Length: 231
Image (cartoon, rainbow, N blue to C red):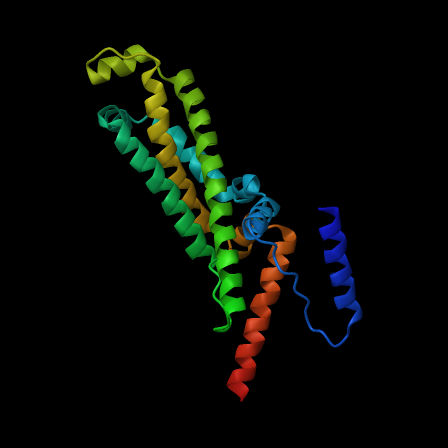
């Protein structure tokens, strides 16, 4: 590792000293080098800070969960759903929020030309974006589950809910209710993210350096388009 690091730094310094070179590329080691690069990009984006960076989404998710927990219609739905339906609801809610953030924030990268390098770079950027968002939303989902479970145990009396459903009801059913409510609250948080600006979504998704890199690429694309229009 140290030998490869010294070699990479030497190449970078050589590229900086060579004024005739516009950019310097370091080939990714194989096998597994590309996966390590992708993992490093995701970790640099800090997906665990995604939801705290989107305050409107966080408020909407918490409000949706708090209201849904004490809603009798939600009790009936949660009580009637099989475990596989709850799993489908979990996957669907996470997928919808990720898709919404990508579309609403304009996070999908498109290659600026038809070269192999441009397509490969776009695939790498898009993969890191999807993994970052999915990881962040999953963390949000788990946090909402815990918060909703604690809230349900605090405010719901099993005898009251059991009387409404006309059957015996214990605290163990609250785990299923919190699971269903977490899916609904996740979708509510995704809708709340629509109140955020595109800049806020990008800042919450990417690290500062990654955001600057993507902004620079966007500016380069705009300049190339203007030059093409003038020609």
